[in-house]
Image 1 (cartoon, rainbow, N blue to C red):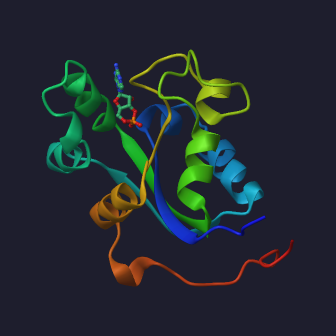
Image 2 (cartoon, protein in one colour; image 1 turned 90 degrees about the vertical axis):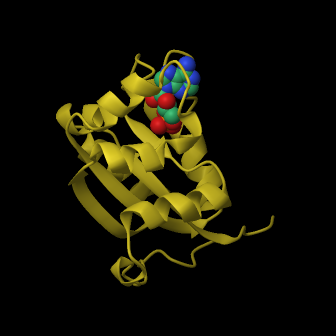
Image 3 (cartoon, rainbow, N blue to C red; image 1 turned 180 degrees about the vertical axis):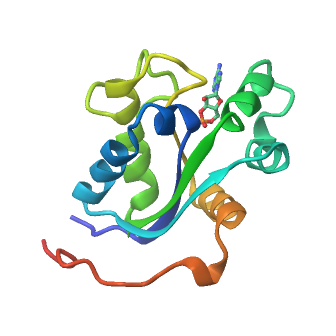
Length: 152
Ligand code: CMP
């Protein structure tokens, strides 16, 4: 079984996840999986950052509500590191629409709304690099070794 490439990805716990008190629950799923938190930032996303983050969705019917929601309160930006982290985190996140997201995924277990769908996760290495750059500077990544690192 290939080990997978070591990757870094961006997770945003959206304002609905923060306001519902699900930060710890969501973070612990990733921690228990073995993903390493290498940077974290609780922030208010303003309209400019929202527009940069969601540039690919500009012009779509749901774009205004998407920006409205992501700017409606604090969000938690996380940089997570691990083998195949991008695909693993997407699997754990679940389908965009929580109504059809599989049970066991974050969206499948905790939500019903497509705009307030708790969490955003980068969908490719290109998106991960671009999106991480919106929230973190290079010196903000803190290297360390998890005690379970390297276990098979
Ligand atoms: P996210 O993974 O943050 O990426 C874009 C977001 O747009 C998505 O999660 C949803 O919250 C939101 N959205 C709202 N309506 C739709 C839709 N019809 N299709 C896709 N995304 C939608």
